[in-house]
Length: 116
Image (cartoon, helix red, strand yellow):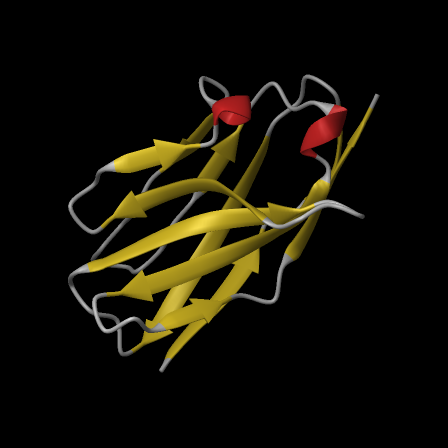
């Protein structure tokens, strides 16, 4: 099993920055994908950004150029740097892990609130 623990959420004004971090532990496979999802009230959960174990990244269009995902395979951490935040970025952000076995794991979520 894989356990994920997020940190770094909070309240920030529009235009500000926050850095989320996800620490993974357990049976982490070298070939895996990790990422961040978010879910706003009344909306479906959406994939914000993902990164493979080899460093390939993917972003939802609405955050391109503002958010940056990275990965430290030695420490099993996945930070998400969020700049130029907008009120529409307000959501609960979840760390996610997936590997070639089809196994998935989710963190407990961290609230990000951007005030206008």
